[in-house]
Length: 271
Image 1 (tube, rainbow, N blue to C red):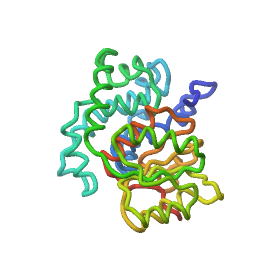
Image 2 (image 1 turned 90 degrees about the vertical axis):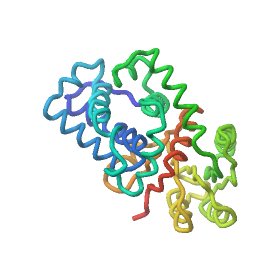
Image 3 (image 1 turned 30 degrees about the horizontal axis):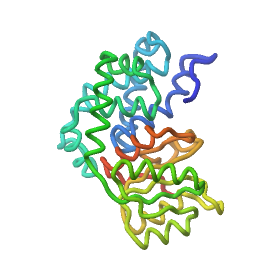
């Protein structure tokens, strides 16, 4: 996890936390546009009153606290009528989940907050966070299963990902090491989920491979990269689901389960 709270101003601390807040908001909503709306609302709230962030143990934790104050009062309770067409099914699914369970899962596995930090962020007890974490793993894992295409040029990493995916109840349709291999596998069998590295064996792009596949059929995508900050700049379309290398089993489980849950097709598009 990136180190925060170094020397600098309040705005420096917020700027350090921003890419990760955007990643979290995107995964929580299943959409770049909706996630960025809540991120912008958080920044606007901090401009008006930054005490919620300054009073927290770290500015990063305080920024997430501010986000959750907004999310809990509006985003989580958004009606289907207020959502765009791509979000309608996701909101229907969300209504069936234990309140705060997905938030806890993402905060713990993707953003790597510990249980006590999460308890402060969502304003509950550590014991409740533990209960919610267990509920999220169970409910989301049961919500969807399907066929997964893995695009990864490191054999050991690819095997690790395959083991995690199959343990979740999904079937791996193939493992591609290059863009060309990914396209061939995609032609042979349509995947319900694509899990892609960025840099591939022959120096081809995992992003290009994904865009080729999405040109044939829609599928949710989880990107894997050692440099997530490079994909979270706000300058162009970004992935809704992104995990960092080196990753943990819990991170892959969470990202895969939530991508399947949302069946989001938002991803990076080549310019």
